[in-house]
Length: 300
Image 1 (cartoon, rainbow, N blue to C red):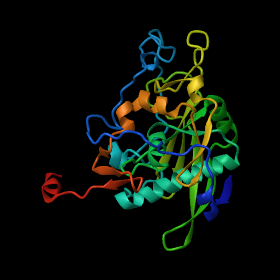
Image 2: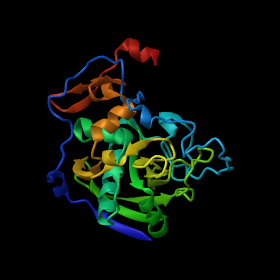
Image 3: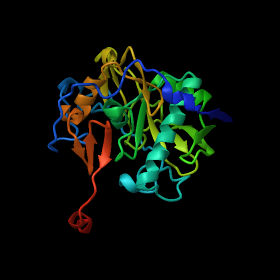
C-alpha cells in the first residue's frame, strides 16, 4: 500500500503554540556535562531491577532481533541493512534526517497518528527547533495503543514525500513504516527488540526509531508510563501534549519537556554550549561546527 504527500513551502511559515529555545536561559561554556551524558535527577524514575518491566522471576525468552543494522556506532548503527548502500556524509546527513522527520511528522499528522518528539530529538527542539548537527538518529514516541493500531492498519505501508532541494528541484522519496512483531510485547525480553517500529528511508536506510509507552503497572506504579528501555514518565509530565514546530513542520512535544530532558540528560544539557566539535551561537541560534586545527586533524 502506498501513499503520496507533497510538502508545500508554506509550511515553513506556520505559527506555533510553543517556541523552541526558551529565552533568558543562562549559558555555560564548559564541557563538564553534555547532551550525551545521562544524569537522572528524579530517583523515582530511575531503572530498578525489581520493576514490572524486569521482575526477578521473569523468564527471558529467546528473541530473534527484527531490525538489523550494518554494524554499530554512529557510522553504521543508524541504517536499516535492507536499504543500506553507503554511509551519508556530514553535510548530506542533515538533509536526509530533516526529510525523515518532516515526512514522518507531516504524514502521521495527516493519518491522525498521535506521536511526539523524544530523547535527543526533543533536545534538538529545545535548543532551536532543529536536529542537532552531530546527531545521527531521530526518536519519537507513541502510546502502545497507537502502536497496536499502527501494526494492524499501517504496517509495511509505503509513503511518498515530495521536497525541494537547494537548486529548486522537486524530488520524491519513499518511506516505509515498519512495525516490529514484538512491538506490543510488555517486557523487553533479551533486549534485542526494544525498538517497536521504524520510519525508514527506502533509498538509503536512514530511519526514525519509534517506541511505545504504556502504563505497565497501574496498580504498583500508577500514573507512570514506560518503554522497554526503562525510560519512565509520569502522566502529568506527558499530558496534555503541546503543539509546536520542528524543522519547519507541525510537531507535538510532552507537557513537561524541560523536566523530562533534565531527568534524562542532566540539567547541564540545557546550558552547555560546546559539544562534539560544535559551538552554540546565540545570535544565529545555531550550532556551528568549529574548524579543526592541523594538530586536531593529525590526531584523528
